[in-house]
Amino acid sequence: DIQMTQSPSSLSTSVGDRVTITCRASQSISSYLNWYQQKVGKAPKLLIYAASSLQSGVPSRFSGSGSGTDFTLTISSLQPEDFATYYCQQSYSIPRTFGQGTKLEIK
Amino acid sequence: QITLKESGPTLVKPTQTLTLTCTFSGFSLSTNGVGVGWIRQPPGKALEWLTLIYWNDDKRYNPSLKSRLTITKDTSKNQVVLTMTNMDPVDTATYFCAHETAQVPRHFDFWGQGTLVTVSS
Image 1 (cartoon, rainbow over the protein chains, first blue to last red):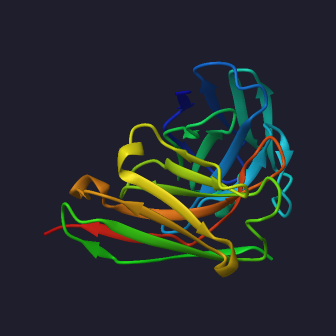
Image 2 (cartoon, each protein chain N blue to C red):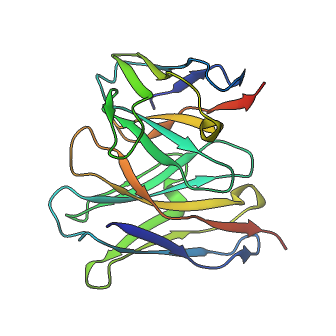
């Protein structure tokens, strides 16, 4: 199985901050990396697919980069509605695997 | 617009079999490349992928749970059914179904709202 490791696990941040979340795969997954946002009590929402493609309807302050084993999700200027948990997920192989999540908290 | 909705029991007893149904609209599971998957999330924990079924009836399972899982589809009813045997309290979780794109790299672009299943005697 491909292990996905996110860092940090949690981050205390403020509105307007630039935030970067890292995801590392245990082996190369090319660009087969997706990012999801999950708010409490809700289903995950797709933000970024194929490492850097912005899902339709997602604000442009979200961006993704990376390939191979190292990936980042960046939020350029954090908005109040962005406080949530973020997950990376690889679709390179079966089993599909998710990172452990990064929780953004209000400082 | 694609929508998915999970249905099934909210409470099951240990050792019982769980059956969940995902009813969807806005796409056909006979369309080349399309898949429907199940993902679960124990309270306060991370997402765990369980299984996928594709348009051609190809089925994939998480090896850690493979012996307990069965996924089937009814294309005419737009439904996917998940069966999990020998339920245990550690299986208490919210269970989501999701549409996996035919487009490669694949991704789960639409999700159901999830259904919380509690395993308790």
